[in-house]
Length: 457
Image (cartoon, rainbow, N blue to C red):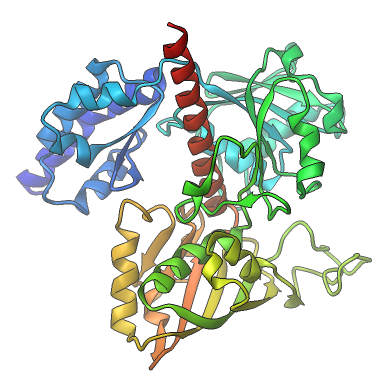
């Protein structure tokens, strides 16, 4: 190891306690060009800083100290902007919200629900303004709590959760990294009074997929203690939000919103960049999608065509609404995209093939460079990833936090016709997008609460 590397390593190690205190005690998330700096890994910090060699790590440490001393809380701070500011304290004061976290209720605890819990409760990762308060499920068996804890801790795809999960039978709760999370048993949303559990003004995330329209989800909103509802599926009669693309469209009146689908989140940011640069005349989206719990393990009856056939040994042609749903985030693409899907015997990670007719000519180099720059931008770094690995395969993208990752070596362009291949972890990458949307809604609610406090003072 060189002396320069060892010095940088030492500086990164010294930042871990600061980032830990900011996240744990102040609920402050520190970002660098849109990427979260986490307190759980020196290697992770070194990897993040390696992309920005112009940063002075000594100065970064001093800025983190200033953030901690400032008293900032329940907010997201952008490291680059703070370094550029002469008066860090005044910037932080404007961002601070003197209020408590927004409680989060997970209605359903399946694949997405458990990954949301992992993401929210991971040591070193901060979700400003939010705390997981409760999980609502139907009781499956006598030792239900133990089963739920085990499924959270151990996962065949994403591995063992690097956190502490304990069962508190007496209080009917899971203790996740020291935080109690109430487990509420109910078979219908109308059966739950959240205020009776000490939960008020909560953000509820429905990841069951049972109700997908505004009227159906309104049952949640009408329950005591619920302030907003997020659906983890495409929704009808509500805004479908792809974070990073159209989240600016959210208003105070949007009490029920959809986080769209995993595929829509994967392709929309890239389509948005291409639409802005070239314009898109028309296109087709083909998704080669990992099988899901909606399919059968062995041949059996299923309400959907073909999905009743054994998922583990067949490629299954099916439909997808992801292409049409793109226009809910990018209205200019209304009616321009078609879509289809093939479910394949892979447990996780999918790929979308975008066949596009652009309004102007392009080249492979130009499109790849455009999307590489976008992947490093503060606006889209969480949404667009960039891969130039010659040996990259689907399992390499398990656990990816980006919504979609361009396989740049597969890009094809002829005149104004382009074909792009976009990998995505249809479970974890999507869950990260949902958490980003949740954070924005929680921040908006805290800003409102702060204004009300100031007016009352």
